[in-house]
Length: 110
Length: 333
Image (tube, rainbow over all chains, first blue to last red; front, side, top):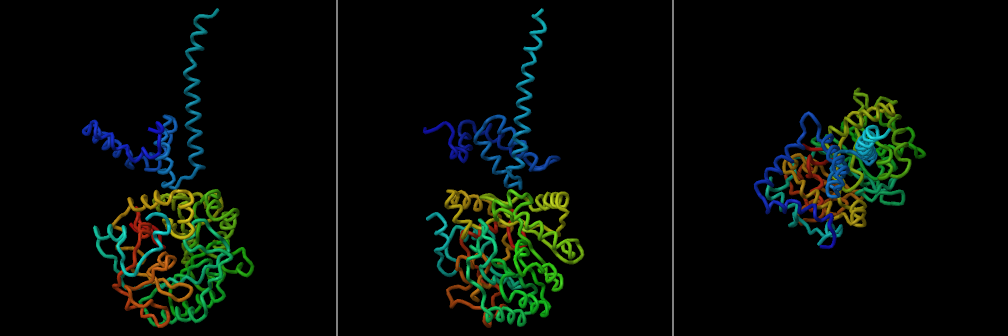
């Protein structure tokens, strides 16, 4: 193994099926159905996928969802807005997790 | 064999190839219907040199259709009433010295004339009156605009092209094009990279909203076209190390439902030097119409005899059958 993450791995994602085929098939069906257009369009769901990929720091998913976004007619201008929306929310989440510090200080300090 | 060179090694007839193999699985052979469109590529001269161009067109190209070939194309129209449409392409077809003659005569013959127009040619000396010329001759204008944003369009077609294209669209709107009043102004969008186009109706909606709100530009329809892995685009794919990946992408997206409506079934394509092809893409690959017979020319061409012919295919044909399909009139399914 040359590297933990390799872009060629993406094509072999389905190899994981061999370890638990029934569970894998359930996952595939769930994943496939969840990304079908419904009240949300395909493009909106692809953007959710892109944001989750970035937020979860998954290089495979970032690769896949960037290409899917381009095939939805989006450009890096659109993804630029999406990545900053994601990053700013992550920043807000990090700050929100600092609230206990504020609360504890209020509790224990004079 | 992989890489762009593989596409250029094509013997006559429907040679065995991956596309022919998929075609055999469904729906079978690819045969022409009655020819109803004469597509004429008047030459490779263009005021632009776009990175995706399957014609390899540029300002330095010298291939220009001679007068006798122009007249032979008009003779074909005069002889065959089944040919309803003359589709003029290039290069920038308006740069051809006999372009206006070709349009005028075809209209006098009662044919629908469709001009593939790059918009920026209007800014070149001697072409500023093109919108008025198109109006006077009732041409349908099909304009290239890869994407509604400036950065994407300029990346593919060159810096400043977007701004000049918007100016060209405004000039067409000013004389009545794209307003739903009979003067048809359509846009053609193609991906700015090695991926498939989006759903045509989605991109049409987004483009309409963007161009109207930002630029006050209106149009009739938007067609999505898949980039063809030949000529300049194939060379770019090769340099970027993306050729095999792109070929896999368009092959995996093969959709047999697109085959009955492929443009090659109802079109015949004439090259600047008068040779006959099943489509403009085959023309660029020198894959002439015919099954091992002597090459056809437009001089005295019997277009009725071309009905039911076998279409020449190779792997690039996956570009027209991928996903929703692709043709000069956009998505197929």
